[in-house]
Length: 225
Image (cartoon, rainbow, N blue to C red; front, side):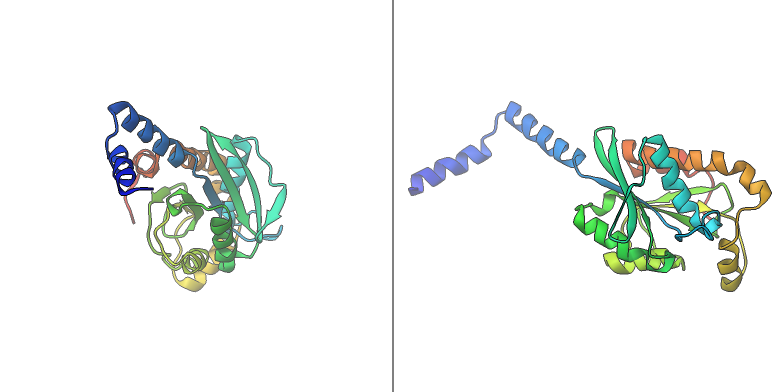
């Protein structure tokens, strides 16, 4: 290619018509929409932990799977996973089977394998610093002592990814909190658990449809503790 040919190529690259520029914008938008999402619920595997407060993340992704007509039929990278489409977006749901404190092993591997942008990763987990039936979605943040989140942050090398904190009630002292989250919800709490999980699922779906800022506006109803 001659120097003159190179000059012509350069000129063609910068001299777009409005129609060409608009077409390029549509391509960029389509590429963004095609990026997959991963929603991970944290918990512990096994029937002994199934109904405990610590497993509310598992309960949420189970509810999302029901909403999207999906089933957890396979294990990959130490997690139960399923996938489907919603609003023309590919969505993966996952429940790490590593036990809570090693959740990052599964999450890190899934993010890498499926090429999930961190802005498209949502981690749902129990939070003892929020009252029961309280939802708090955030675009980033620390672990606040939650061992599962600590593991994920260590594996990803950053705390800059969205999370959905699900309040399970307050307790005092780290030892008391550890015992508290490994117990089932009270009878009174259980009566409201279905509606709570439905609202949390609504929040996660709003995040998929409208982005995290809009989801926060709609579902972060009470002030930070």
